[in-house]
Length: 234
Image (cartoon, rainbow, N blue to C red; front, side, top):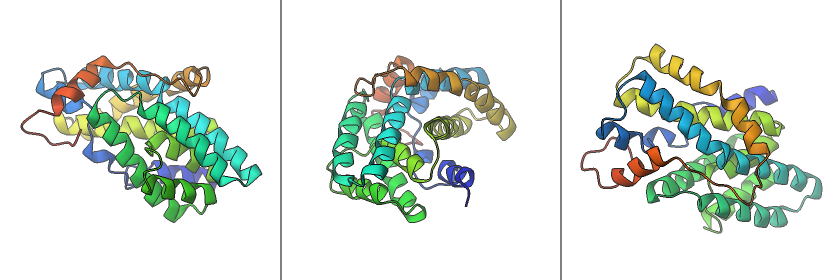
């Protein structure tokens, strides 16, 4: 299978990460009347992408680079220690319990599935370390290592992570508003136009100093924890 096909496989919405169960604050926004139509959803996707540009995409790029070096050094243990440092820094940027647990849960599920379809020693070592709870196992770290394992470059790997993240959020919005499939894809396409700029921002940030400031969704995520009726885990 070509690198492109393998990347599409990992980014497919059917890949079993459990992302469909998380709205990352969108359900809280809907309950507050702040998610009513296509424009509201587009605004939420763009704000989420702004947050990814200074956090998840930064860490994904750094994890990809470290995984590429590990392939040359054949030293998985040292690589896992470095990946753990990146992972913990990113985990600390999650301001709510729901968003922390979502990043860890989807990361672990991604690793469980990715190690079935990608045979790579470091990817397997990362899966095992996460299973032992030696590190949080956030999704961007898993994506960075998997992208390197299939031979995708850092840019393509970041694009795939960003698009799959936006697609999952768009699908949540589609169910909540609700929207038709064509309207949802139009919103997603508009938001995804900004992915190259987000990756450019990410490349300029120190991977040991990720940050995220998306108060519109973070506040709704905190409120969502106490919402009596919910469709989503987060």
